[in-house]
Image (cartoon, rainbow, N blue to C red; front, side):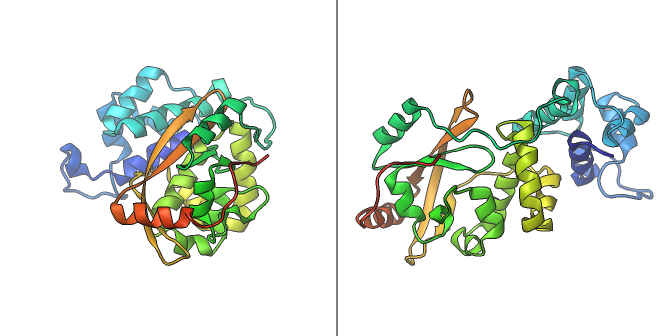
Length: 278
């Protein structure tokens, strides 16, 4: 049985074209990308050791080996962080953890006060599972009619993969789906991520599980929305991590004048107040 670490290494190895790292392309190759022999040589480790890692039979690589693999795979900074995280949860440090369980949903009063100060901005507090924990009234205005906030306990990941409206609402649905699946690896705890994944996989199907196991670090550009009102919105995103809470505060900013005007019109509609969801 493999491990997330082994799956990621194998996926990155398969995605690299030999010529891109200066290796010849002639000769017979039984699989796409780099051969284990190629990667092991670049990382300075044995093929046997690399095979054990990819197959999940070696779960405790040293920091030096992890860094050597990152160099050999030409990983960018975000991919390097993901590789280190997978090594951490695969190895002994996180091999024993509490039973899968949902994460805490409370938002600290000081974070709620920060949201109030951000009004009339578009802002939301979430965790990496996609739980929408609190938001400004302007966030509700922008999301109105899309269906995300209809649930008693809204969850962006569940919405993206199970609500047909999401595929229309998010102009770049594939990119958003990649982001939400990837963020589950960074969930509040290993246990809560496992709990949520087990709950979502049966209803979301292979479109979800395939993305989760691909380990593709997503690019996070402007968020493009096809609002139910007929407006097209482009929103830049700024994220403030709240590590002690395993949450993040996300602020959305109009990326162009057309979006700014559309957001002003949406704000002018009757709406509620700052909402904390528990």
